[in-house]
Length: 344
Image (spheres, rainbow, N blue to C red):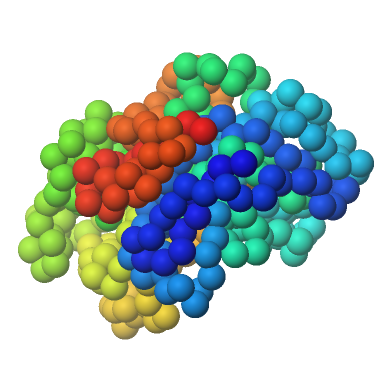
């Protein structure tokens, strides 16, 4: 079959790769009908070394079950399913607590050990605990929004949940990528009174406003901090949803949070240490977050997608066939696209 292979920074190719097969009785194989490129895929696109090992990319997908292992009980051939970016058994103590990204038998798609879903098909370890059957056909008009449940909508929601977003709260979203835009949706859905989107791309800002952002801060650094404080009477915001992962974005997040506020960090951190930790400490700011347990949030978010109350699929502003996936990487890296959907 064909798959998207990343060899090194900027070196993405469509090649013939081994067909997925049932390796364990808990596996399934799905035919991929929709996949996409994630903002976190751009980190290796910028930095991967040949010595790190080539990998079949992709950790977000919707597909159709083609084959199941002998121990799979909740799936059957022909089921249309969403594939969260992490696989999980659904039965360990962390899965039972709704933290599937910490599953003791789990892991992540799209690395040298576990091939990803920017391909024609993919093997799903721990299929019962990972895949979620969707009540739609494979060509349903809601597919773009349903696809976001594999990662970005769940990740934006996770940022809002761990930061304590709720009715009456003032929220700032740091980053105007797809996750940040979904975080705006999540904040509005959870009842935030004011939502500040921090970004500077006109198309993304326009979409953020349609999703529910009430204020826009396009400045950076100290100017951005001053602007947020102006908007909040000098206090700062209750909740910061950090959706970037860089040192500057974390510093900004801590400096715009009000004393006693919270930061939900879901941007994959690019530093080993948390910057501005003294700022957070002396202001009693709660810091939480990590890889979102997207599987745990599907059941909660799915009805809103099916009934049209939220439309996270609007973050996809470009669709490419599998053969053009390398161009999709370039477009996202060059900020020509917010998020690219791949149709194998």
